[in-house]
Image (cartoon, rainbow, N blue to C red):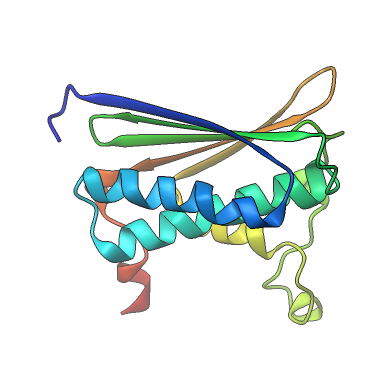
Length: 151
């Protein structure tokens, strides 16, 4: 992909867990088209999967009338992913740290941890009328950022 190229993909899904894979596949496909290796595409896909799962479960509380909006913007080698729900929002600082020994057996908090591990930046904003907007960015030129920590 040329540096000046840009691509945008947008999708809106109902709050059903079976729709998560569709959004994940779009993320992985976009990464592969941008020249990201299989590992990198997988980890970015996992971050998207966790973000959409959180939007469905915690944001929209499994209300199928509420939607999850996903937007992927690829500008050269920068990927910006926005996941928005229509729920009441939450305080990310109140999510327990999954690495704390007393939380090792808990499943909550892992999604946000994974997103922060796999992506370069993770930011939340909360809309005044309700809804959480999560923006994750990844510089694809750096690779996955995972391989270096594994050895």
